[in-house]
Image (cartoon, one colour):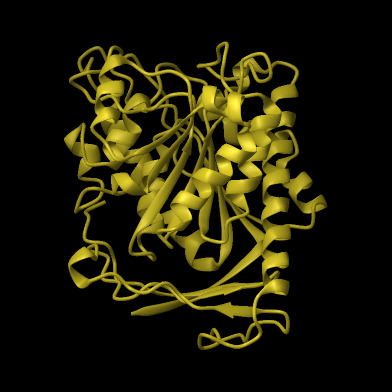
Length: 377
């Protein structure tokens, strides 16, 4: 069954993901409540956004789990992902822009899987200090947070690989790691054999974060597919942002991260933004929460400005059928959808063509296939 999604960039679908199950210690699960209390919704509304708060998925908290030292808390993690995924699906289908506040980095699995309910192929820009490419056989800690990219690519704990019925959840050429500053030797070896594109924090310091982000965005944009923007706050230097369990020296400055976020969020094919690993227990005065809210509001504001500019500059002739049931606004400018892949490349979601896209300050519409993905949840 085809579904017409009318995107409305000025509407935000806010979803909390209060989980630390994949992390080494508790604390991240408190992030959604803390960011709401710090004024996230008020700030977004003051910036001109309509915010629909979808509430929180189930809370799952990190435990030592000494019985499974190579992959801790997997049952709790899978339960959290299965509860989060349909909530994000509802948000994507609504046309509002999904903003997912977590929680640990495992939420990316649910976000990508939810987007793939409606888009045949989805890329990933993963802003994180760590490569997250360990697997149970190589992990020094058993922390599943450090395995997220491996699970995206179809390697790691079987329970998480099976979260999507036909691995990989994201093809490795469609993954970009941005801001990487820490890697274990097995991760370095895995990346040496992988087509995953890596932009290191040291490169951003040398070449400028904005230039590096533009290069990364252009590289992924060439695929023409929707992508998820994942933002782990530990990519920020501990001196600028100490309120994360994994803070440390090095990393990117707050300004560098803002530049990169603005550039990535401004791409018309970003399907959702998620933020992870903010730990309110390490933020007694709330100053880090306010910094994080500033980053998110600025990035989302830059997104709307870019879409408005793109709609104004686009050619006037129509390349696609108007969305139903509501017609695009007078300023809407349809753009031609990318050519579909060959059928052999298609995923189990049943999509037979790329979505049609309408980019305007008020709406973008995408026609997608609502066939349920083949993976058991």
